[in-house]
Image 1 (spheres, rainbow, N blue to C red):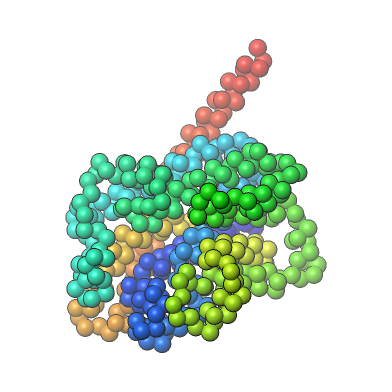
Image 2 (image 1 turned 90 degrees about the vertical axis):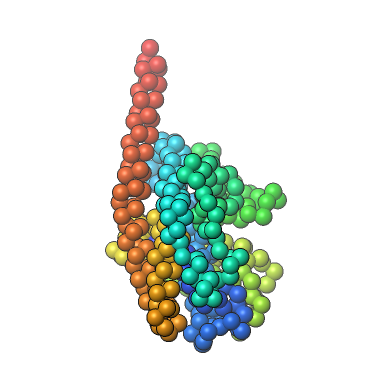
Length: 398
């Protein structure tokens, strides 16, 4: 069952959360410089395969591959272009309205001085020039920022994670276009190859769009080539697929910039010599998704109740975690620091409680905002499609 893909998305969203909540307290994770390490534990985390647990950039690559898979797999299962039309009509609103709600939350936090970056400056964990939310942002500006700007530019003024929305929207329509044009064609794999091999001369970030098509390829193989699953049962290819997923995670454990590589990182650099980090991450993300898709044990893990719950609230976690870290998280840590709690112990308390708070808030955001919006848009779009089909049949019957 490909429901495991939602589980993968859920855990990837937590990696993005870790990416934005940990390095401020243990800078060796982001700088990769031994001199800023606070001890052996954070140094090991930064220089070992466990770095993948903090690599939010790699998690974004996984998101893009998953989006390509999820947006296309239903078409390959049902061979219906109506589903594609419905998804095309809903896609912008599916992204934009929750994005708007998350931006509104950040503006409210700014206006009521709920961000606690100043406390991090006083503690010495943040420099004054690194403060992000020290500007005034007016409510009427939210519309341009969250409904237009984040979908047309590769940056975001309010919610810094929204730089991915342009790629998410454009990548989604690239997927839809591929499905409409080549989804039932015998030449579709040739078209996949042409796009993946030759697209890329127009921009550095085209690798993100290739990840979407990688996801389509995986959905096509998963749906239309059941022989792979039968071979797995006959020849027990389970170990191979687990190794595939672990290899992808290993590639995701390579930092973008390594000034002082460990022996493990040197081995990764040797294996992937000549390949930029974006190519490494694209390959790694595809291997992770491929391994989980065809491994019975990994599929079972990522289809568990916990994984599926995280998958359900993953978009909400992604949208809300910055505002939660900068408000609740920083305030909590500043209180612990003021009470002379040891740094490592204070971090554990901060991380556990902030993670719990983020997941809880995301659950209610998904329940009362994201899910109703998605359900309403589905009803409206399908109603429009039904009316259009009825009108077409009426015209043809005349």
